[in-house]
Length: 459
Image (cartoon, rainbow, N blue to C red):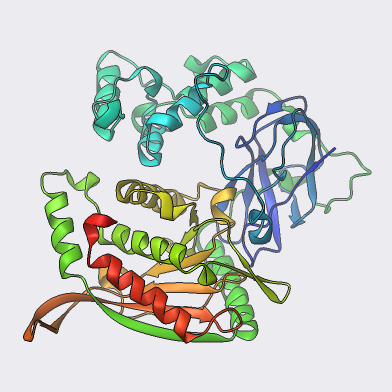
């Protein structure tokens, strides 16, 4: 029977604290279901399960801090699967299957949340959950009947005018599973909408749940005091201190073990920004594309063309990644960085890249990232934005072998066809592992990024 273990949510993670179980003994779980909330040094993370099965035993109580790899629960597998039980580390992701495609019409009737994924972008799904809007019955006004932000906001306003804050589909499903009257639950979403976490909180307050059962005495887990069961996520100065400690530990390891080499190239952004300005004409501010999406997309496509820079240094050898999984460095409020991954970034459209980026930034700063988003990045991009320095020479996140950096956009004198003018430019930099590649290969990656940004319509 497989163990669900404390996942490794980054090369710098050594232990984590189980804050909450989202399942109990006897519950059926599907691949991708959130089963636990884990607190790490950097963030509070929602952790998914990576197989289909039934929870047989919970081995660790909420509030317990245990090392990475410690069994947290046992799950009886219901169907054959090649996926791992917990979020895989970078090496394991090389052989892990990609997330499943949406069910085909020949499959059994889709569960409501999975249907959502077929028609909603991540940021619209998040908004619908916040507002308690059931998108399953919305007729989208976007291309191909895609549900947009405006559709969700209009539905929320209509529902409120008819006299009720509403609840998300996931919240209703959770209430049904727990036997809770959702009408009696106080919502924390916008306008009082009931979210899934409100239902779980109400369940904990109304009756003991199987998830809180004390583990058997024979279970080899870390000992805790009785007060540990009420442990809350780190906050304020404590969180900032733990983030700085984790970053310092990881960067020390990276500088000690990785023979870095650094390259830089100045890129003319005139064509890219001009094209972006025309594309954003008429769009409301919340739907406009930012230059960061162009930079991420160009980096992802370049990495796909230069696979020697897209992968991991493991066991004294380079292992190419199974796709371009772009880690995006995000600055957190109060200080510190976290780098969730955009999986298969080279296969996404520009609009999709922008929406995923918005969603990741919002959830990273709220502390609601998923475990799968913090593992498996095959290279990382750091973008200092319009308030940063002109160039950044970053430190590689092991076991990756590449980090691409972009400084702020700066107007510079620029010669075009023998004439000098002023152009918007950005300094693109590369930090790479000399064990895996050399400057020739790294230069080609930066050159490809430059070429792609000169033809933004093709991105």
